Image 1 (tube, one colour):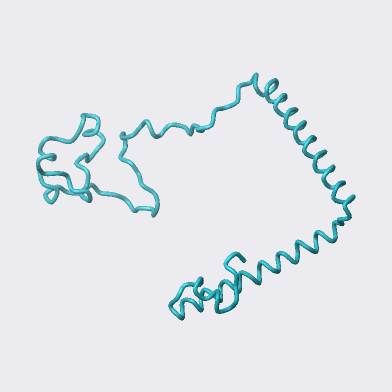
Image 2 (image 1 turned 90 degrees about the vertical axis):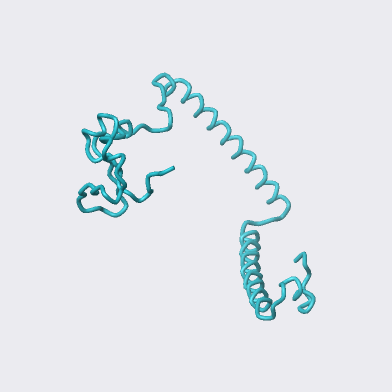
Length: 158
C-alpha cells in the first residue's frame, strides 16, 4: 500500500482546500514528485508556522494549567493556612532553640563547631582528589580501583 512520504509537502496547498476537507482528488492521486511544493517565505530557525485555517483550537489565549484561586479562598481559607504555617514555624524555632541550649550546656561552642565543619570539608576535598588519582591509576594499569586498595593499605569502608 502506498503511503505519503514523510518529507514530502502536504497535499493541502491552500486554506480553501483545507475548509473543503482536503485537496482535490487529482492532487491526492498524483505522486509527490509531480506536485509542486507551496511557496514559502524565509524561515526563522526554531519557529514553525501552521497553514492558515488549520489548528484554530491551538491559537487561543494562554490558559495556565494551574487552577486560579477562588475569591472566597483568598480571604478565608488562605488566611487560616498562613496562620497554621506560622504556628508550625514558631514550634520548629522553639525546638531548635532548645537543641542549641542543650548543646551549649554540654560544652559545645559555635566556633568549635564551625572549625570542625571546615575541617570536614577539607578532608572531603582531599579524599575526592585521592579517589580521582586512584581512578586514573586504575585506568592506566587496566584494573579496577577496588584492586588497588590493598596496594595502598586502604580500607574499602573508608
